Length: 172
Image (cartoon, rainbow, N blue to C red; front, top):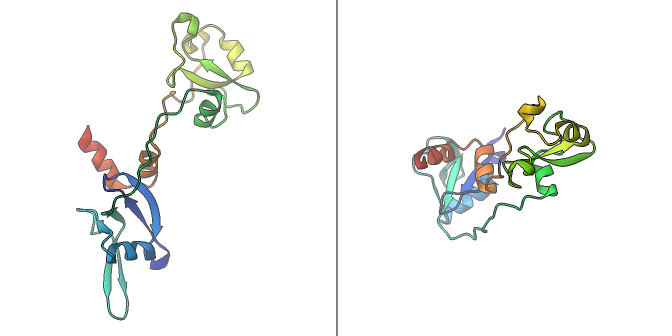
């Protein structure tokens, strides 16, 4: 792929991954002193030549200017959000038809209506499971239910940003 078609991951002042920009935009941010290369991550990147200037463009840059970071709250536990999280498929059989919500630990047994206890299930699997736990019903969940993560974190992990993985390791 030609150098000018490459993209660069942009981080906020607080090291949250914000977006990807094309290399031309990254060069402008670096030359106008609005961004800087991430410390320790300058060896990977590209060298761009112009008639009068040579610019080293890293794969990850950090904004020096303040950017508006929108606050994010965990979305409410409702049908639309559960179906979105579970990719509109039954978490027991994988069917995409006639979906309902199922409480992994039934509410009658003290289960809560929370992200880690509610999954999408087709009507057939939901009625088969009934008022039992998946183990009692002999059924197995395809994925463990969990709350959605912050979009910036998901973006950083999806981009394979080694920097973001290192930051998480240092926080733990």
